[in-house]
Image (cartoon, rainbow, N blue to C red):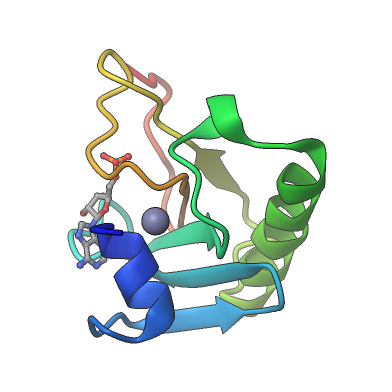
Length: 110
Ligand code: AMP
Ligand code: ZN
């Protein structure tokens, strides 16, 4: 499958890995919007949150917590968002959660 994030998970394209477990993989965003900007993805390919089953959602939540603690933003706070589809400006069609932190983030989300 011609999917950028599947290739990063498989090690076919270099990614700057932050965290990995049996179900999830996390790496630094190539175009960071905050001092901490990590992408957390399920290893299993799915296009976006519309295709995400409850088990995968739970594994992603576990990984969000683990990465937040590892990168030291669990105490200061962070934002975890997933863009979906055209209006959500999703550019990579493999489900990913943006974990943003390390600074006071904007109060608006549009
Ligand atoms: P989205 O717009 O929600 O689909 O987010 C896609 C994200 O992937 C953007 O923040 C990009 O900066 C990021 N991105 C694109 N290519 C790469 C790459 N090769 N390595 C790491 N992050 C990437
Ligand atoms: Zn994929």
